[in-house]
Length: 305
Length: 328
Image 1 (cartoon, one colour):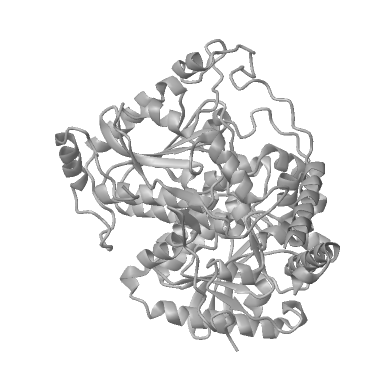
Image 2 (cartoon, chains in turn blue, brown):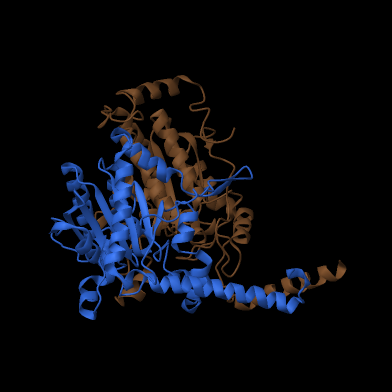
């Protein structure tokens, strides 16, 4: 059918389709960043009773871009660690736009160790543009802080669930994302760099961010298809910002389901299984044959409800 | 049918024109064998003999992955692991040019399959598994292949109980593989976790530059972390930091010497001394008593396995002669 159209129209059609895909993905990026979306503490409020917030890295700093604490979630005591963004100017500055410094990751590590000692499953909430790029952060060892936070998560004896609830930006996001199960909200994004950063580097022009976003496909659907997330969690129609309570309930169902399934696995193999999960990630060619492409399980795309 | 072919051709040409217009002019670069600091110029063979260190000012030129192995491994001891891996293009990624085009260009320029090669080798007679990155291959960026090569190399090191040595030179994760590249950070950290659980030493060498997702994953997690002089070692690059914070950056921002001062690395080692230093570290590791910290996994070797492996390897004439990580 397509080949019968005169060339200019074929080109136009292709370009229109591309542009539509581009704007779809860009809409997804903007939705993931919407400041009406529930942040970590909003989910805590709806999901957890008897919340005790924990502060500080015990080495002189409390990074407000990372919140942490212990609470009771549907009969279990769990530890929660998450990025926290702010809604108004003052709160945004206080939370440093959800961009953590090495001290924030040290705080996360402290909570991971605490949860491991006391036997609390770990739930993390990922929502950050990235780790904070500052001179002091670098001098305090931002890179090593991220690497060590990941390593601490790999070593946990307790079950862990990571939830990408908004913006999963770069190593700063993954630092708290190496878990037994990775959940991703329907309208969240997950990427190695922000679309702006990608456009600046590859197109040498920040205004190409829509193109960059379309090229690297940071949406939940693609992340699932690439085998990076286990479950895409549905949001209330229109997005999580329309109904915080319902969004939290849907996420809570998915977390509870994930915890149940992890606890059904033998505990002495947990660390080995967790390593094996991430060991499988990647797609490459081996002697000309594609290795690592996933066969999506039918029906696994959407959980909850 | 002929009429069908013609429009196809036209379409391709139009695309090519667009691409060329968008491409900014190539910056003028000094000759790769001219020292950017003191302008001394070297013949290729001369620079190779000098380990690519400027005789006049001590500037360290970049070293390719294969040449690095020649510099560090004992002659003829290198046995490759995980050969034959190439990047796929799972996202069908195109920026100004398609990812596949950049890949083939990098392959031609470097003669490598991707940005990391690995193999079993000996350094000053001490067996180890050696990984080496090449900045000339797409900025040494880490995609699925680099993650897999590092992981297989670690598996071999953990299985045989011999130390892992990695030489990093990378701008970070490979954007063209987006979230899969990001996951290689987690994957390589898992590989390091296996080394730690197995009680196998890991020595991480950081060459210029080691930044982004590579320094924030396996490269930061060495039991010993050493860097070459003046190497840029930062998570965020200087330009990003400058643009985000509007701070004036210190002149030595992120450099190896500054990292040493801030307690981020163990030592700054000049390239001519690197092999000696690695030999020393490997000898010291072999002289320790291996006490596995946790024996809760079937992967942890029983005590003393390293000593036995070392004895076995020394008794064979060519050191480690076979690897099971890659195709023969």
